[in-house]
Image 1 (cartoon, protein in one colour):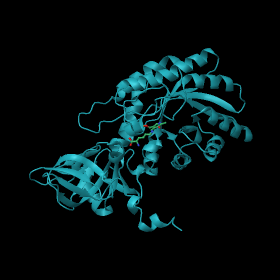
Image 2 (cartoon, helix red, strand yellow):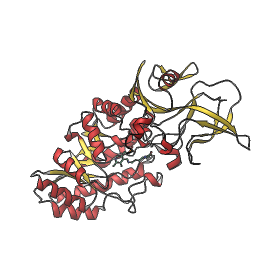
Image 3 (cartoon, protein in one colour):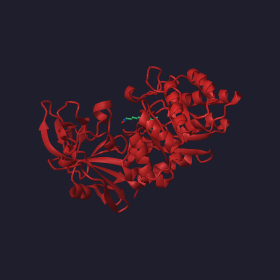
Length: 414
Ligand code: LLP
């Protein structure tokens, strides 16, 4: 069976009961379903099947090597957002021509690496960055492939922290400025503008922001083509949201593909997509054990668990909602509770105002949809070691990232 489901009453991942892994590896623990990763990658890929496209998996969503390798084996290309992510991509087996390098604030060293590797495109965020790429390429006697990131001044309708396409955000540049820049740089010997890029935010659940974003780069590509500047691809970024809450309205992949392809098709340009969350989010859960139960004054409970904001920061940072399930539910009256972590911050809440089956100290909980922006956003705050990660494949499972030890954590200290 694909993904997370109950066998009898016990929560399992594919053929593996979650308590088996928790007993063997300890908690907190991130568990990923290989089948979910692959099924979702394929579903997205199939939605675009009738148009030339490449799915560049956004490594930032989950950069664990085993996960990135699964994406490569499935046929993905890579979207890297730092020198570190370029290295992850290379170690996972991607070739430079399968990597797009995105992100604001690329350092000189990162640009040198990307230019000399010959990545498929460096998504340039500013005229200054274009000049720096040009200078590096000239110094190395090579031609750098760049795409220009447009800021279309669109409200993604997502949380402000993860909306990137408004003019007040640091990302990209206006289409007008990009147009002037590309035309003025068209004759540069060491710079080839191969594409346009846009990404207006993450966890987008309605079609309009995406449609407007794609339209912005399609319009500019059309203008440039009329002026004799031919591009190779249009990079529409990532951003497709998932339903964290039961019944939450989201876009289907088919609605998403229809919106993108309707806008892009007439250009004939190859389509690049950078999906992260939609593929990896539902593929993971965070397993945690109850360490204490404390009655609140109003009759509700604090369920205090061994995972906190250091293992999953999304609720604290964005007020994000993640489903929480008891792995082996007991009979009895449900309780009203806040599920909180052990970190010294009142924002260290994994789930507020929840109703759960009765729980006891030692019981296992699974925090749902943590495969994207979960483990990768971990920190050592309160000197808490980073959790282990496990990949489940059918009836088999293996640790793909071991738990950090106290010695690991302290080894950088002089
Ligand atoms: N491309 C670019 C240029 C991006 O900035 C991002 C995400 C993606 C692709 C992938 O977007 P996705 O398909 O995953 O939505 N930590 C936040 C999400 C930050 C997203 C940053 N950029 C969270 O936990 O919700």
